Structures are given as structure tokens and as C-alpha cells.
Image (cartoon, rainbow, N blue to C red; front, side):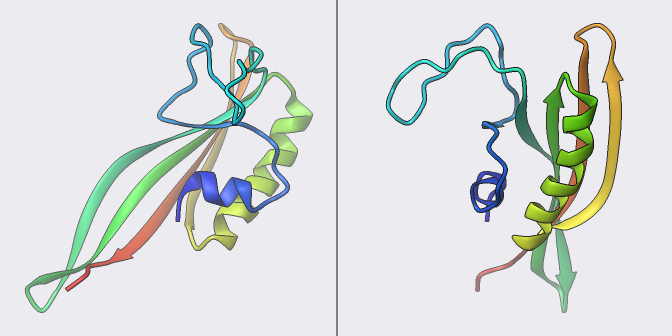
Length: 123
């Protein structure tokens, strides 16, 4: 289960990047063609990974992941809040919290959805 998988299996048509999107870098699409500069994107990063113990062994690991969506449109950030939360929930992520802000220096709206992924430990 990955954030990319959750987005790909939904009706969300936005590029997804691990960690961050660098607007100064040239990214290639699936056909090795350069992507145009993006006006909206999703990035995600691992915040913390914590084992949970039962009977003196780590029964499963919890990963807290922040999923970020950037756009210049207030309308888009409002609709993406619902779409992205639903896509993540459908893939089994636990929604921990949602935050939204406006970054006046970049003129982007910034949506952050904090999620939890629980992974059973293989024995």
C-alpha cells in the first residue's frame, strides 16, 4: 500500500512525489517526456515509524505519513480534501488529522493530511 497507489486507484489526476516537488527540476512522464511546470501536486513524507509491542515482540509497526497537496485554487483545495481523504481511507489508511493553510510567499494553498499505516510484523 502506497500513497501513489491510493491516488492512482481514485479519480485524482495529480502527480505524486515522494518527499517533495522541486519546481527547478525537470521531471519525466511515463513516456520519458518532460512534464510542464506543475501548478498542483501531491507529495508525501514519513514522519515517524513506531513499533507496537505485544508479548515482548513487535506485533506491528505504525507509520505516520504526511500527505501534502499544493494548489493555487481555493476551490481545488476544498474538493481535494474530500477526494484525497476518501482515496486514502479506501486503501486502508487511518486519517489522523487534516490541516489547510495559505502560503502567502508562494501563493499556494497547502493541504496536509496526516495518516497512519499499520503493518503487521512478519515472523
